[in-house]
Each structure stands twice: as structure tokens, then as C-alpha cells.
Image (cartoon, rainbow, N blue to C red; front, side):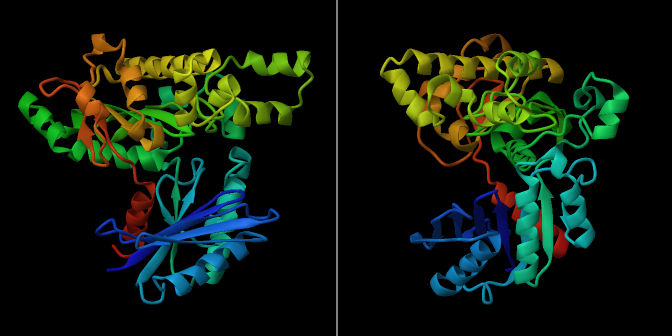
Length: 404
């Protein structure tokens, strides 16, 4: 079977997986970190064994060459793995890219042209594409985080600012984590418990109303009707919406003007504050949910407040999206926190009983890596945990383009 090498290029990192898109098997994967710093680190995992090194990694070109060397040394050999294409995660596709696309020079320039909309992400994405095209003579496909949300209803996508200014500068709600939201919402729709629920009610799949909570260090929510996203929490940038590890999420825009005038912060200072020094980190001093939970257990008042703010924002979004959808059939949790933090799932649902939402304590706290229902056995709507797999989603979208 053909395989796909999935690349996710960050500003100082390169994550990768070699995936069989048919079976979903990960043949190998890893990450190169601290690119461009004094000492870089690479960890390559294959067949349950990890090969790691620490050495200077000058740039993304050197990082990918190092990865290719490790495939040859530790396996599996890319020459023997039947690699059919490389799939690239690209954060921002603007309005130009509404679906995955085979990369050519024009695509690279178009993605580069979107850098003003994603200055923290698209430059690294472009670099990763350019380096990979130089070193790997196979088709390359760009898969965009924003694509799933490109056909949001106009009322959801439009900000209430001067229309001419918005049009000139590309200001609209784009949404992010789209690959994850699409993968999870599709998995929910295919789950036996969900299909049985719809069949029992005599309803068509296109009427399924679900809210997906992608909760990791970055976090976002979506409202999905059938197969279409009709609302999402992230906006022009990934800063809007939920409380995240280091990002503030929603706030009064006037706070920015206040800080510029009163604290004499520059635009870059405010950017750094809201993206890197806010969220759970800004409130409690830690951005890892596991550490925050430990501090809450120790009675730390700042950690307690941070968790309360985090959960309050989540409940507010679930309630708002219930209004957008006209009700909820499924509430799905995914990503690192969503899949592993039972107390967060219980905390989100607490107080939303008026929507019919509830979790069964034993089901919620049972460890499992499978998609599963955690609400009471006889109850609806369903509350679910659905592991995301963005790499597999990218691999499958890639192979569909190059080997239809």
C-alpha cells in the first residue's frame, strides 16, 4: 500500500509521521526541536523504539535531512515504504484555499502571500514545503487548518466592522484546527451509538447536531450540522475563543487600547502578552493542565480561579452553540486535554443539565484510547470522547488527491 509522509513545520520544530492512509498505521514518526538554536534535538520512533539525538540543527533544511537520514538508519526506508506523497499541514489558507491542493510554485507563492494573516505559522509552513519539495521528488499536498470552516454561514463568518476595511484586509472568521474538527465530527457521525440514536428517532444524518471541543494547549470549539461547520470559536487568528494554555481567548478589544495608552505597551508587546503570557499560564503560572490540576488539589487559589475561568468559558460556548444549532445531539471532547482530563469533561457538563447533558462517572473516568460514549447508558444527548488524528486525516486527504 502507498504511504504518506506528513510534515508539520513550526517556527523552530518539524513534526513528522509516515502513515499508511488505508489502515491508519503509523510506520514511524518523530519531531525535531530547537531548530536554529544552539543545540537541537530529534526523537525518531519506529516499532516502539525511540532513537534520539542532540546536535545543532541550523534550519529546516538541515532538520529534514536529519529526518531522512534517520529513516534510512533506523527505518523504515522511505525508498522501500512506497511513499506516494508528502502531506503538509498549513495553518492559514485564507479564502484562496477551501480544500487540499497539490503544491506547485503558484501555491507556494499564494501561501506566502497569506503570511500577514498568520505571521506566526505560515512562514514556517512555507519553509517546510520548499525544503521538502527540494529533497523529496514526489507529489506534495497542502492541507489547510482553515478549509473546514471556509463555508461558514455569512452571519457567523462576518465581523461587525466597516465592510470596506474588512474586505480590503481580509478580515473575517476563518477558524482553525479544522482538520481535527472535520476528522472528529465525521467519526462521531459514523459511531454506532450515534447512528442508532438517529435511526431510533427517524432522523437523517444531515440533521445531526454536534458540538466538538478540541482541547489542547490550543483550544477551539465548533458547531457542526450534518457534515457542515456552522460556527467556530477561533477567528481571524487562533487567538479568539476559548481560554488556552498561553492564549487569552475572548476579551474586550478595548483592553488592547487601554494597555497601549496606560501601560505604554507596543503592538508587539500586546501580541506577545495575549499569545504567550495569557490563558492558564497568565492566570496561574502554568499552562499544562496536569500541573494545573495538581496545584488545584494543593489548594492553590490562582490555579482554582484559572480552572474556573477555563470551564466557565467552555460552558458558555456549549450553551451558545446549542442556540445556534437549535439543540445538541452530541457533545464530543478531543485532543490532549479533551481526551485525557476526566475532571474537565465533568466540569464542562456540570450546570448544563438543562440541555440534557450528563456524564456517567464510571464511564467518564475509565481509561481508553477508543472513541466512546461517556454519558449515561439510556440518555440523550450523547457525550463522547473521540480521539483526534490530524496526521491520518492529512494523509487520507493527500492520497485522495494524488491517487484517486
